[in-house]
Image (cartoon, rainbow, N blue to C red):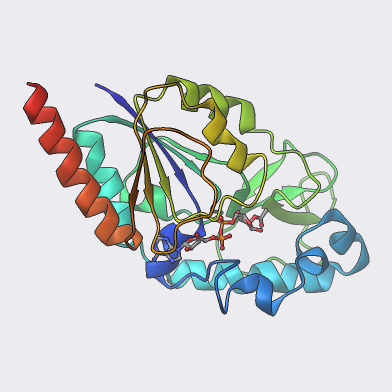
Length: 233
Ligand code: OAD
C-alpha cells in the first residue's frame, strides 16, 4: 500500500466545535499565549494554566470526531495512512485512525513535573493543584508548551520523507518545527492542502489546494485518490 502522510492542525477539529488558534475569534485572540502555554506561565501562575487546559479538556470530553476525522480513518482501507497532528485532542484516534503522532502533546494526559516519563491518562476533565504523580510531584498538562522541545519531530520528519502522498489539513503553518515538515517531502510527491482559507506560503512543488473545510475536502480528496488509483490499475 502507498504511504499517505497527513499533517493536521486545529482546522481539522473545527467542525467538532473545537476552536482554532489564529482564525477570527480563535483562542489566541482570547488568551495571551505566553500567559497560558509556556513554562514561564506555569511557574508564574499554575492556577491559570490549569484552568485554561481544564476548559479545553472539558470541551474535548464533550466533542465528537467529525466526518473529516472519520474520512481519514476510512482511507486506511486504501492506503497506509500516518497522521502527524499538531492537535492535542484525541479525535483522530476516536474516529479509528491507528497511526497518529502528536507533535504538541495530548490533552487527556498529564505528566509528572519531576519525571517526564511518568505520564497518566486523565479519567475526567479536571486537573487540579495537589494532583500528584507517584513520586509526590505536581502533575502538569502533557502539552508541549512554547519554548519546549518537540520530541516527536524526528520521527515525524522521517515519515514525511517516506510519504508517497502528503496531505496538509487545517493548519496555518505558522508554528515551527511542525511547519518545517513540508521541507522533507520528497520531490515529485503530490501535496494536497485542505483548508477553507489557504495558508499564504506553502514551500513545496506539486501542490493541489482544496479550498474546503476538512469534512468536504477529505471527501473530495478521497474520491480523487481512489479514482487515480483505479486509473493506474
Ligand atoms: P491555526 O489556528 O494557526 O490555523 C488553523 C487553520 O485551520 C487555518 O489555516 C484555518 O484557515 C483552517 N481552518 C479553519 N476552519 C477549518 C475547517 N473547518 N477545516 C479545515 N481547515 C480549517 O492552528 P494550527 O496551525 O493548528 O500549539 O496551530 C499550530 C499550533 O499553534 C497549535 O498546535 C498550538 C498553537 O499555538 C501549541 O499550543 C503548542
